[in-house]
Image (cartoon, rainbow, N blue to C red):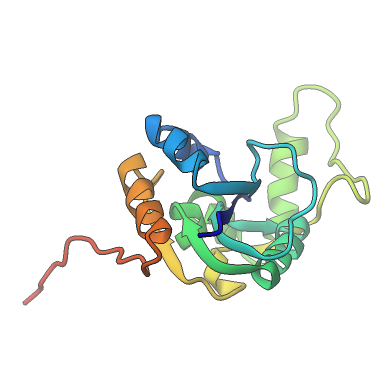
Length: 182
């Protein structure tokens, strides 16, 4: 069997999902023997590759760079997993949406001018500082997503359960507690 090409991506979030991924501990050694990690913030790869089998996407879509890379990922990847609550719902990064249509200006004003201790100015550098989107979005609002792995962050055992199913060649069955109302 060919080794799976796996990628992980970190958009607008705290990196907690990647920390939980690293909490796989000894399973990481087993995983390393079965996959090729082709793109991730934990490896030095600058360009998202072609023909990726599965990508775990952490974080919400917050700026133009996130948006551009996400479209490239969707075109080049068979299976996308929204990895953690920021990717699934927008979570904390989407809190800026409450400021309404002018939220970008409000957020930049608050962060870089109102609360600046030194050198108050909004950073602007074409090609270096990406423009914020007017609204933060979860991944599925931009591209199709095959699976959702919620949690803030998802526990390592849930990540392992997903990866074990993928490595076995089965479609992941991600189920949780079913509540009945009424």
